[in-house]
Image (tube, rainbow, N blue to C red):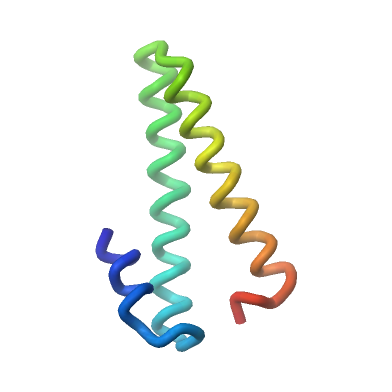
Amino acid sequence: MLSGFAAVSFRKGSRRHRAAGNVFVLSMLSLSVSGVYLAIARHEPGNIIGGALTFYLVATAWSVRQAHGWGN
């Protein structure tokens, strides 16, 4: 939550904005992985799909931005 707030509060394109955004992306990825793990442990197929979809969408958006240089 703090990294998301920091990313929003800094000027877009600044070094601090990018750093906070990267921390936010990594936080989202780790949260989605832990959510999938817990959903598997508790046999909750809907949450497995939701966590996997969240991971896919965040990772894909981040990798496309990096590949095209939009995050630099």
